[in-house]
Amino acid sequence: MWWKKEPQMDADCCCVSGSIAMLFNSFSFVLLVLGTFCLYYVPCLVRMQVPILIAASFIFYAANQPLLLALLLVSVFANALASYAVRHGNAKCRLAYASLGVGVNLAALIFFKYSPLLGRTLLRSTGSVGEFLLAVPLPVGISFYTFQGISLVVDTLRGDGGRGDGEIVPRSVTKHVTQTVFFISFFPQLVAGPIVRAADFVPQIRPKYLRDVDWQGCFRLLVLGYFFKMVLADNLKDHTFWISYPHFQFRSTATLLAMLLAFSMQIFADFAGYSLIAMGLAKLFGYHLRENFNFPYISRSFAEFWQKWHISLSSFLKDYLYIPVGGNRRGTLRTYVNIGVVMVLGGLWHGAAWSYAVWGTAHGAMLMVERALKNLVRLPDNRLVGALRAAFVFSFVTLAWLLFKLPNFGHAIRYMKAVLANTHLPTTAVGIECMAIYSAAVILYHLWHLAPAAGKARIKAFSETLAYGSMLFLIVTNSGSANAFIYFQF
Image (cartoon, rainbow, N blue to C red; front, side):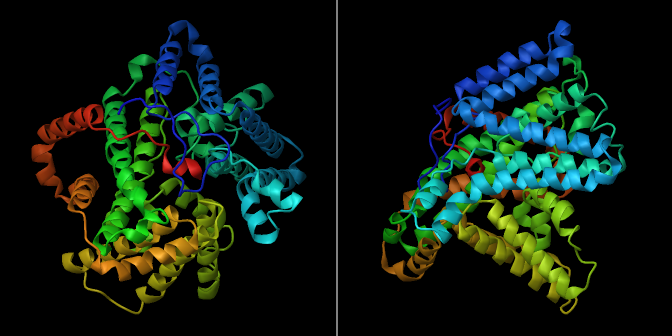
C-alpha cells in the first residue's frame, strides 16, 4: 500500500540500532520533497537554494533520531577542517592533515559500526565494556557519508584528479564549510548512496532554474525506482521472510531454492530502486548522481559483475584502496593479496558480522581464480559460452546473498543443509508462482538490455509508453507493505 509509516528492519537483518531515516515512500517524505521543491525554485530565493537543501537534509536525517544528527555534523565539520588545511594550510603538512582527516572518518566508522562485533568477539557481553560496545547505536548512512568525507580529503590532497582543487576547496572558509555540509548531507543519497565524490559533486554547486529541469529524465528514474522498490522488492520480501531462522527448516527444497532466487531479485530491486530514486530526486534539484547499477545479473565474469554492481562502492574501493596499495603493479602474488584484502574489507563494509567477511572473501576468491585462469584457458567467444558463464556467475552471486539474509553463519549453513535434506517435503505452488511473477520483472529488465539495439529502436516509443504506464499503475495498485531499504543497515 502507498505511504505507510516507516517500519523497523527485518529481524533477520543486521538491525540499525540508531535511526531508521524517513522512507522515500512515506507521506512525510513526499511532503518534505514537495515543500523543498516549491521553495527551491522561487526566483527570489535562488541564492538560498543550498541552505534550503541543507535544511531539508537535516530534517530528513533527524526525523527519527535527532541526537544522531550531531554525529553527522561532527563528521561534516571535521572533513571541512581537514580538507581546508590540506588545501590552504602549511604545504609541508598536507599529508599529515589528510591522514588525520581520513583517520577521523575511519575511527568514527569503526567505533559506531564495529563496536558490537568487537564486543561479541573479544569481550564478554556480560561485562561492563562488552555491554557498552553492544549498546553503541549504528547511525543510518554512516558507511556512506564517511566514505564521502574521505573522498573530499583525498581528492583535495591529490589535486582533485586534475580538475583543480580550487573548485572543491575555495579560499573562503564560510563557502567551503557550506559546500561541505551540502555535499555530505544532500538527502537523496545521504543514507544509502550512491557514494558521491567531491570532485564530481562540488563543481555542480551553482544556481539552478526550473526551466532547466529534465522532467522526462526525472519521471523515468523515479517511476522505475519506485516500481523496483514498492512493487517488486516490497512484495518479494513477504515471501523471502521465510528464509529467516528457524522458519526455513520446514520448507521444501524447491521452495528454499525459489526463495533464494527471489531474494537475489529482491536485493537488486531494493538497492537499484533506491539508487534510481536518489538519482531522480537529485535531478529534480539540478544535480547529477552517477549510475550505480548497470544490469549486473548478466555479467559473464566476476570482474564484470563488480564493474556493474554498486558501481560507486566498487570504484571507490578500487581508486582509494586497491590502486593506492599497489593494485596489479607489484607482481602476481601482491595482486592477489590486494584483491583479497579489498574484497574482505568490502564485505565487512556491508555489516558488522563475520559472515560479511566470508561473503567478501568468497567473491575475492572467485576474482583470483578467474584472473589465474584467464591466461590459461581460452574459451570460445560465442553466445552459448557467454550464457553459461553468466549463469555460473549469477548462481554464485545468488548463493552468496544468503549471507546477507542470514548474517549468522551457522544459520546459513543450516539453510544449505535444509536444501539438501528437505526434498521429501511438499511444495506450495502459490508461493513459488508469486515469487516467479515478481522475479520475472527483474529478469525481463536485464533481457531487454540484451535485445538488439535496432529491434528496440523500432518499438521504443510504444514500448516505453506501455512500460512506464504499467509500472505507474502497479505502483498505485499493487505496492507491497512499506519496508526500510535493505542498504539502510549498511
